[in-house]
Image 1 (spheres, helix red, strand yellow):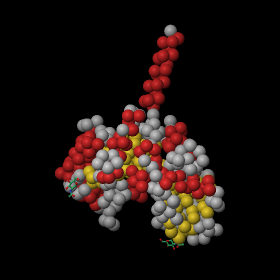
Image 2 (tube, protein in one colour; image 1 turned 180 degrees about the vertical axis):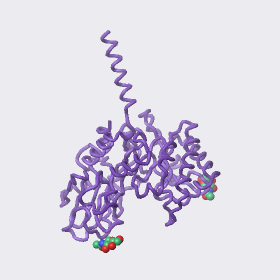
Image 3 (cartoon, protein in one colour; image 1 turned 60 degrees about the vertical axis):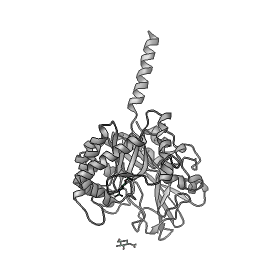
Image 4 (cartoon, protein in one colour; image 1 turned 30 degrees about the vertical axis):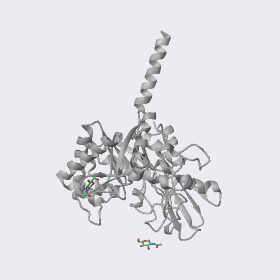
Length: 390
Ligand SMILES: *[C@@H]1O[C@H](CO)[C@@H](O)[C@H](O)[C@H]1NC(C)=O
Ligand SMILES: *[C@@H]1O[C@H](CO)[C@@H](O)[C@H](O)[C@H]1NC(C)=O
C-alpha cells in the first residue's frame, strides 16, 4: 500500500517535472566557431539539458522565397556537418526541440518585405521553410525579420499587415507537419509599435522570443545600459524611461499579447562605449563612440559576457557598479565603459519573468555565456536561468 502510494507519488513528481518545465530558448550563433582561442564555441560545447529549445542562427532567404544556407562549409555534410551535429543533440535529450532561425540582422530586410507582399511568394516561402525543416531535421522555424516597416528610411506601413499574412501562411504549412513556428521580435515599444500588429501575429506563433536588449548602445553620444530591467534615476526624459524590460513587457501585454506566449530574452553580451572623460563614468555619461573590441568577438561597441568576466577577473582596474533600481551592473576602466548582464541581473530578470507569469526565457546567445569558466566559476548565466525559472 505504502509502496503503491510512493510509486504513484514518484510518477506524479516525474510527470510534474516534465510538464512544468518552462521554455528555456537558446540561440546558438554558428559563426562562433570562428572566434579565436578560448572564444571558439562548437556544437559539442552545448549542454543539451540546459535548453528546452535550441535555435540555430542563421539561415537566409532569397528573392524567390528559398531558404538559403549561408555557410555551406560549416553547415552541410559536404563540410563540417554542423546542422546534423546540432540536431543530433536530441539523441542525448529527446525532449529537446531544435529550430532553424531564418533571418537575422544581416539578411536583407527588403527581401522579407517583398516576400511578405506577394501571396505567391508567401506560400512558396512557407513551403520551402517546411521542406527545409524536414530535409535537415529541425523541429520548426524561428523567423528573424529585423524589422518589418523599418527598411531604408521607407516606413513601408504595408509590412506590418503583410507580416501577419506571412506568419499565418508559415504557421499553416509548419503545423500541418507538427512543426513549430516562433519569431524573434523587437521588445522595445519604439520598434514594436511600428513593426507589429501584435494582436494579429500572436495566434500564429507558438511563442514569441522578445529581444529585450539593445536598448542603449554606442549609437548614442552618452553611456546607457544594454538591457535595464527597470527605468532609473539616470533616465532624463520620457523616451529614455521606455528603454527597459518592464516598459516593453507592459507594452506587449497592453497590446493583447498573452503573458503565456512571451519569452523574455536576455543578453549574454554587453554594449561598450569610450568615455569622453574618464572621470565621468556613470550612466548617461558623455561618450565619444563605441568601446574597444573584446579579444574573441572582435567588434567595437559589443562584448561577450565571457570577455567582460575576463576583464573583471584580471583585476587591472575594472570596477563593477551595481545599479540598484535598474538592477543591472556596469563596469569601467579608464575611458572604457561596459553595460552588461551577469548572474545577479539575470536572476532579477528571471524573478521578474516568474512574477509576470511569462512563458519562459531566451538567451542571445549561449556561445557568449561563460562556457569556459572565465568568471572563475562553473555557474553560467544559462544555469542561473535554469535554476531560477519556475
Ligand atoms: C534562391 O535559392 C534557390 C536555392 O538555393 C535557388 O535554386 C534559386 O535559384 C535562388 N533564386 C535566386 C533568385 O537567387
Ligand atoms: C549628442 O547628440 C545630440 C544630437 O544627436 C546633440 O544635440 C548633443 O549636443 C550631443 N551631445 C554631445 C555632448 O556631443
